[in-house]
Amino acid sequence: MIMIRTHLPIHRLHILVRLGLALVLPALSACESAFDVSLSADPPDTAQRVTLPLDGLTLRRTDGQVIALDFDDPIAVDLLQFDLDRPYGLIVNRSVDEGDYNGLQLRLDGEGAELQALDGGVFPIETTTTSGFAPLAFRIEDDRNIALELALDLRLSLARLNDDRYRLRPVLRAIRAGEGAILQGEISPLLLAGPDCGLGAAVYLFEGPDVEPDERDGVAAEPYATAPVQIQQAPAFYRIGVLPAGTYTVALTCDGEFEDGADLADPTLDFVGTPVDVELRAGQVGTLNLSP
Image 1 (cartoon, helix red, strand yellow):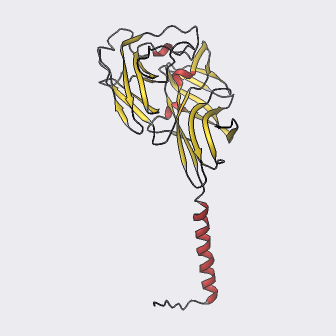
Image 2 (cartoon, helix red, strand yellow):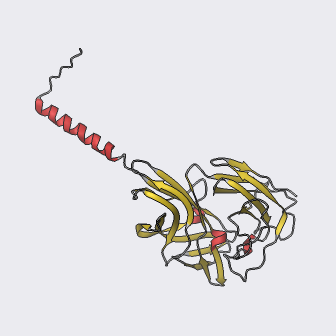
Image 3 (cartoon, one colour):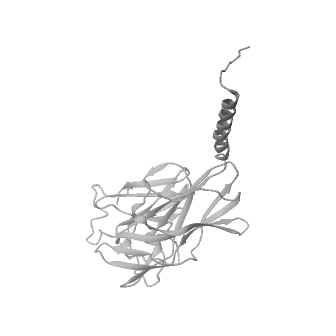
């Protein structure tokens, strides 16, 4: 038997015991579950800044109930500063009731949203608080942390109403952190050779194989996600993330700047080349180069 002797007075031992308990108690409380949500944006072609006052997040339970995770005050965020590599921490270390959930909705304040165009003009954005939920099934359990990723496709969400204002109806997609796929690739110069293929060059993804590509207009196939083609780089390339595993149809357009948030008066988008199918796996980066 090993005996440990101490020459500390009894009252000092009591102090040390209390300090030890004080250190243990925070560690025990740290075992509570934490809920985190990050937000990135798929940028439009025609803006250099899109500032939205974020008010929080709404979670939808499978029984139809909703839980609002509100901020004390709206937080104005330029979403073009936050991409796949630098997402915005929308919800950080929140405690949420355990249960089964199947959707998330971005909460926006009705005042202060604005878009700054490439030419410097600043335009107000009308926002709606009745946008749909991004579907995602997840469970929150005690003592288990969960992190989710959201992406806001601004090309599909924004519509220009007239010369001095825009409307935003959020088009969101969501995945559990670590389970999303990324699709990236290069674009052949031959596909971008047309005189009108510049600012609006964009890649569109549609859920499922062999989809006939179409703009977001409320009819036929609706795009699931979009991304601008980085034409200032050589070779030109694209990158889209926060994608569930599955099969997608990939198409290229030179008219992406005309996408106008389900506005039926929007000009028809023409797609370039032949659409290509791709299968994406959870947590992996897929490469698909587009050529004639």
